[in-house]
Length: 418
Image 1 (cartoon, one colour):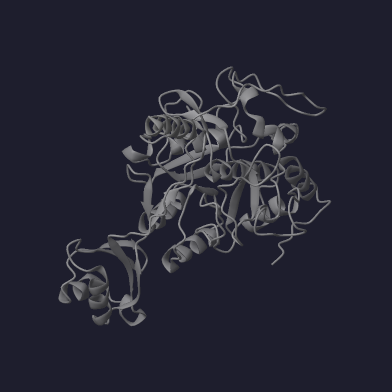
Image 2 (image 1 turned 90 degrees about the horizontal axis):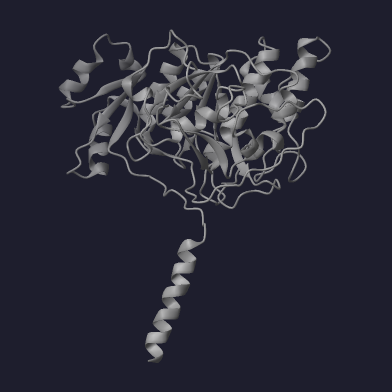
């Protein structure tokens, strides 16, 4: 009898625990099924390098970029042994596992209720029906920044799960001359569509939400599998596609704790072409370095709550540049719907939206100068200066736009601090 009563109590406690809205973190994916290689410099100038690989019995490979090639591994043989055989071929300078990046989202069940937004002087509100759900717009001071600019047609590449380009709040957002694949224009997971709405949803259209950059254009590039994973080689190819389609900013709401020289080189190449890279700090809830956020010049974004306290899931480390609200973000979702989402995945697009507003005022700025303005204008939250939890602080779009306005007017000079 006592055992039965204890069992009932245990079951009820278990049920209560399951009903509590704990965030669920995505597991790290360190597996790989292929490698990325680069031919030795002495061989890279050869017109038909594929003949060299054929001669060594390497029959399946694909060029990723420049001198980088993707070679699939046999799933039935030992991976380390296959890599060792490639090393012994004496063809390659570098061989790296083609690791997976995972989406930086948190699964949540509940929604925030409608909030009352008290309008302040010089603050702009919109007629979008769900504007009152978007608490984060006021927290990052985009509503006051809009009094100065609502943005121009800056193109933002979203490397993600694809985007539902037929969503009413995203209709007309893709430039007419962009070359899209079928997987870029649909979103079976929803993540890319959610990111896109935060950045650039159609605004003042009496429906849905307001985007931070009202006039920004989006270039959706689908890079993930149905499980929400993207390989390093896929990200590298997508960066090239973003450049070819005229992107000024690349938003990557995925990450990994595995360093890749190939990915770092691709990021650096994009930056040398004038592209600003914004990525996520990660959702591991631990102190660890995440990529691509940790690469030089990338803006790595962590997540805070409505009281500007770091979220428990937000990864800390030297790769954190800025923070923005990350939980219960109301945004667009596939099939003309809307959803409340959480994770650093949805803090990072707020920084991307801010960057487009800065560029709209001072289009002559370099990507490095735009990054520096966002850093200088941040509201400090943690230790003085830069720290591993909050980076340089909370995104403040109003202050960023103010600095850009002074630079555009010639009363200030853009600087980059190393």
